[in-house]
Image (cartoon, rainbow, N blue to C red; front, side, top):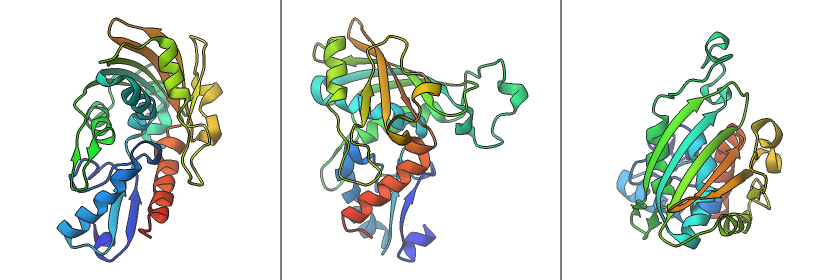
Length: 252
């Protein structure tokens, strides 16, 4: 906040403030229009600068795929179970004796971030405020002994009927945006049921893409797997991409 008061425009990866009503939470390929919430923020806080946030590394992995489904088939409920890399906990976040030959079925605060941030990202901005998406989201977050790349199993229920093929096609049609760090193909679709895998596909599109696969039809929608590099697309790269968005929209 002190930087913003002093006139700096800040693109931040930190978790504090992401859900504040006047702080834009953006993925440029998903909700670039939310950046204009900055105008409300400046009016309310009296800042010459501004604050923009990117979402949690696990949230950012699934939301581009969910946005494609929502646009085509209207999402109603989402359930997700994550298998998150140790780098997401920081250099000294998980000791080797704790994680080797193990999986930790809890990551403090992670479930709540996924459940709330995804609804803000997919919400609608009317020029004054963001109305959260009315879908229900339930998350279970797990730490596993991979170095980089968060893999997630997602169950998405939709109001409109959707087949596995249609779900895959909706995601494959998603392109990047005209920003230097945005990949030409945002979502890479694999037909194989055992894809994507972190070691093989975490660097998709230079680490800024999302890989999906394992599509199956369910009673009320589809199940699929998604993967993104948690420190590139999910952290530093996301903040740089947001900085590029701020520049393009004339905020820098």
